[in-house]
Every structure is written in structure tokens, then in C-alpha cells.
Length: 267
Image (cartoon, rainbow, N blue to C red; front, side, top):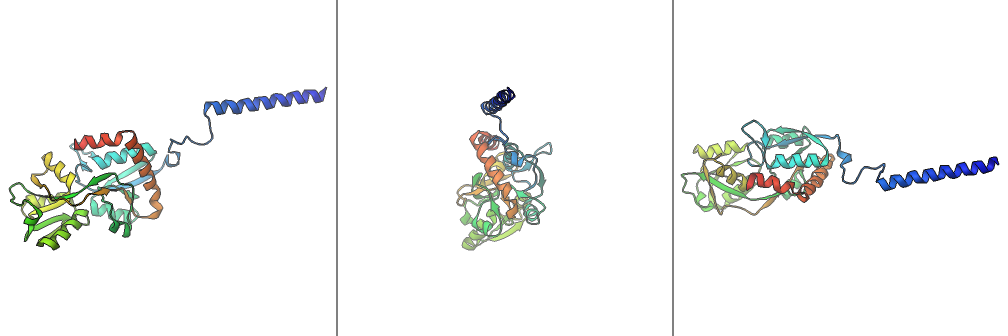
């Protein structure tokens, strides 16, 4: 009798166990996080460096907020991937220096993806924007093409694709190149008459002229071949941040957020 009762009890326990497992399976419960949840990055915090005065990608609005295409993409990616960050709005050269010194984890600053930069220690994300570099001059200038630069002075931001492009043209056409560390300094030299022209990323020049931020004119036809902007890190142990950025970028492109960000500034 006792053995029969024990068998019945065992059958009841087994049935309850199977029922519990079936209920968990049917309700979708699991000890592992859902695939769509960026659990691995939850609670992670990074320091991100960026440029200054690079409209419409990063700039300070009338209320003192740092806004722009890069800033909105970074914010959307961070929200999608579940990490937080501090932003260092410090300028191009300073942003690179902070990353190289390990004081910042990554950099988003309209940085073109190039083989030279990869070879010198930059690690890039997937491209998030295609851009060319072009030329702008003062409103009363009679410079109508790059060929009119012979014997002139051109100012560029140090270490940028525009610097590389202008330097190559200077050797071909014959003009001098002056280098500064920030875009505002570069623009001021042209508007103040210290330089005849400047080279910068085309969307930045056109946006700033269109909105009245710059009293200059863009020279159509002055562009080079397009290149992609990428998020960058400078140490291999920061590659997790590249992976997070790539995953978030794909998601915000798929859900329409990316297009909404671009249309806010470029349409």
C-alpha cells in the first residue's frame, strides 16, 4: 500500500513539473534575455569626444545645447543599444588627442573613413553618411573654380580630409595652405580677408551658408570624390563600442529614425 502511494505521489510531482515547464515554454519565459534586448550593454557608460562648430553635424544651439546630425545619431544609437555616455565638445584636434590618450572611448565628428587613418591607428564603424569636400569664398570674391586659386591663400582645418584635398590641389595648381584647429577660425580667416578660400565638408558649408551662419558663397563644382563618415575608436580594447554603434545604426536605419534625423537638418 505504501509503495502504491509513493508511486502515485511521484506521478503527481512529475506531472506538475511537466506542466510548469510547458507553461513557461508557452508564455515565452526564458533565463536568457530576448535577442532584441541589448542586455550586454545595459548599464555601460562611455566618454565620447566630438568637434566644435561643425554645423549641421555638431554645434551649439541658441539655448546652449549641443545638437546636430552626429549628436542625434549618437543619442539614438545609445538609446537603442542601452548604454549611456558623457559628451566632450572640445574640437577636432582635441577630440583625437583625448581618444589617443585614453581619456575618451570614441569620437564622432564627421570623420571620413580613409585607408591612411586606418593605417595610423583609427578603428572605424560602418559608414553613416556620404560626404564630399568643397570650397567656399567670401561673398564678393571672383573665384569661380579651383583653377582660380593659383597664387592665392587657402585655409583648412588641420588633419581633415579637406586638408588632404586642398594640399593635393595646391601642388597641382600652386597656392599656399594655412592650417587652423577649428572650423570657426577657418571661416573667420576667409570672411576677414586673411585667406582667399577655405575647404570643408560640402554639407557643412552649404548648410551654414543657407542658414546665414556664414556670409560666404559656395563654389559649385569644387568637390572631390565622396567618402563615408564613421564613428571612431583608437584602441582595440574599445572595439565593443564600434560593435554597439554598428548594431544601433542598423536598427535606427531600419526603423526610420535615421531618415528622420537627416531630414531635420538637411531638408
